[in-house]
Image (cartoon, rainbow, N blue to C red; front, side):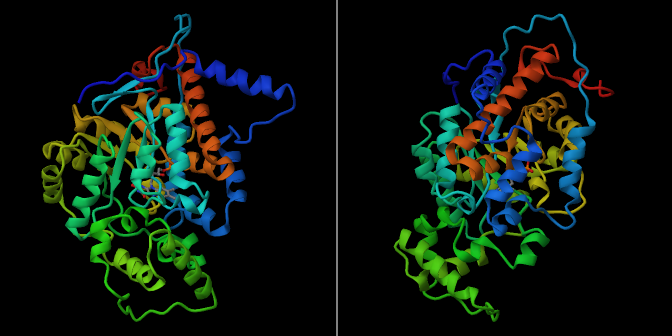
Length: 425
Ligand SMILES: Cc1cc2nc3c(=O)[nH]c(=O)nc-3n(C[C@H](O)[C@H](O)[C@H](O)COP(=O)(O)O)c2cc1C
């Protein structure tokens, strides 16, 4: 793949963003999307329904993994250098055959219609306006073709959950190729759904209401495989909420030309086939035969798995614990990063899970990540102000990353290394 020219980025994005906020603020206006990560989450939570807040913010079990992810960032400390002429900065990084404007992409996050009606499309538009890459979720609320059409030349990747039906996998991958995806990101940490008490206590799983199924409902192979009627699982919904669920399923069905009965069958078919607990390394070799696109593995955490991934010829790794949504009490991704990078050799490692600020992005790069994926923060921006909210979150992350770099005495994103952090060199 060749490098393409990117939109001209300002060389002082941090200062420009500060001035935009402060000068506007001189008239009394406050940012709609808070820059403080804790406030961003709190405001977004109050803008969401109870079910959406539980699904988006919650994690597995006691949420110890989520806390570990944050602690790992907080315990790292910069040791800045001075008198180094940092008047011009270059935030870009080279990643999977392409130069990215800043060292992050928007992570695949499913079921965004829970927080905003424009969902993935609003995110795609914000990604385009800010020139930041976006990884389309397999559980999206808007079909990948529609998002891709809104993104111009801005990089998009496709995240795959490996269905138990290989023909559906092939179909999704070839659609991703056709809509300009530059990589396939296979998520490996969700072959089963984690134990999520916040959702369990509300008895709420969005997919059963037809949400987050756009990639499937728009897929000709999936549609051809749907049974005539939903198979009887022997478990029945209880309570009057069944009326609301039926209403929502019918409404969703109309969008895709499907009756209520067909929607029920689609949901049942999805539930039965969406993932494969028997997924193993031979499947990665098979994926290589299915696509010419680079392949990244997401949800890999153990350094030995990184070594196996290299042996299997993958093009990149995303060190992720799914934002602490899958296993309670696992290690923070940032803590595992140096060991994973050491085993990954020449293969680029991206990191996610717990990234909340530009300073966090700088810490991840200092510990060896080529780039990061940003997850929940942009969803909070979406909940608060749609497309503009996502764009604001992106601008704030770029601004803080830029200022952190400069104030640490560096001029290039690629200058960050363990020397920048206390006790790491
Ligand atoms: C509500 C929600 C939905 C998600 N959906 C997906 C998904 O469809 N596919 C996927 O690979 N990861 C998914 N993830 C995981 C993200 O890609 C990313 O790994 C995670 O958000 C990182 O954690 P953080 O947001 O706490 O930083 C989801 C995360 C959240 C919070």
